[in-house]
Image (cartoon, rainbow, N blue to C red; front, side, top):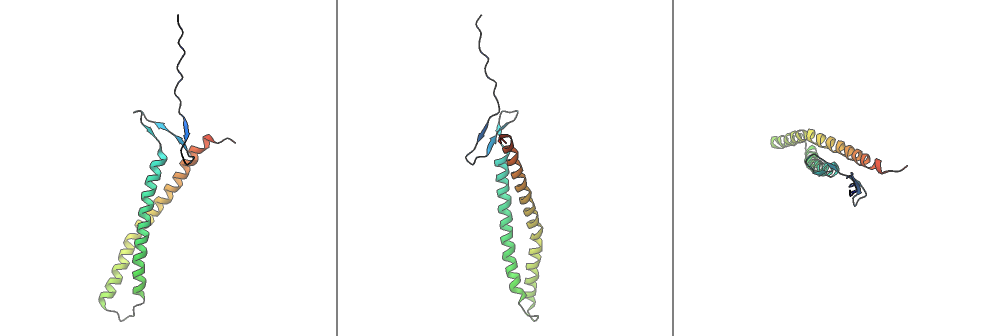
Length: 125
């Protein structure tokens, strides 16, 4: 009887990507390989971009509000209404600025945590 050598069993392999980040691939039950870090970085980029845009818009609005503060008490009613309108708009976007800023901070912490978790198994002390 002829003996056939057993085939080696496949193992999860770890490769370093161009940035030196260990790329630990996870295969789901459909056979598709996934990695969470690139997806998290893409979502983080969208959230940070939205946050920066909101901050620039708020800065633009408050610049106009600051110009309105130097008006005397004898300003016409339309200028008072414009000032109130600017203040309402700034107050309206304030929760969005805080929300996007908080989400960006939490995603930053999560990305650093995932990176460290992927890096630790490959470190030799």
